[in-house]
Image: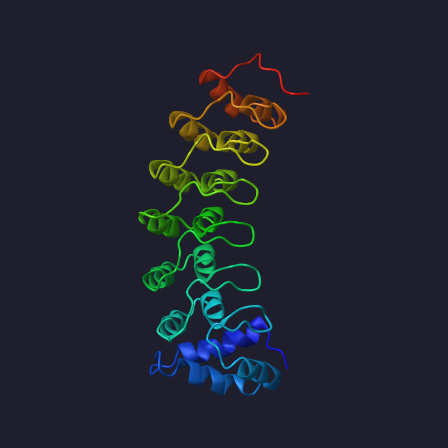
Length: 257
């Protein structure tokens, strides 16, 4: 019998509530709970009860604990010999990617203390910082940017930097934080969009102003030869149009069509 996420949540939540939980007994407690699901148990047994084993849901134990924000189970597992804090699940997520997306700051600290790579990418080549920015996890962004080894301008498969994602989603405070942390306001994605292009298209006026103040090129062109002003006009963002013109945008620029 295969266990679904809801069953894993119930099972691991019960273990998380155990006041006697420790690195020495966490695997044993999981074995005991899992034994009622013979197929999953036998498969894990066949894999030598490996602590990094991927179960049918394509998650390992550490991913499952983080997915359900079970800090006690996470901390116990991190103390188990052989645990890999950088192991990927079947979808390419590391435990740190999972924690960053969900805003689990305590877990992120614990993972980093146990060797998690803050720049390790998922299947979309997004880092934990990308995922925190995309999901509006301000506290996580602040935490990650304190790391000297963080790549604030890491590029995803689509060419997005964390600043692109924060801009597109409209998280102004994260945008400001990234810029303070040397996020590149002139970075381009695979379509040659700068963060300013994305902000102008969405009519995110405060982000537009912030990017311009930080030195964004108002006349940068995308793959189709469009400036931010072209996009602001195309999408009817009147205040953005005024702001761009006020910042010196070329009103006579022709697009590539």
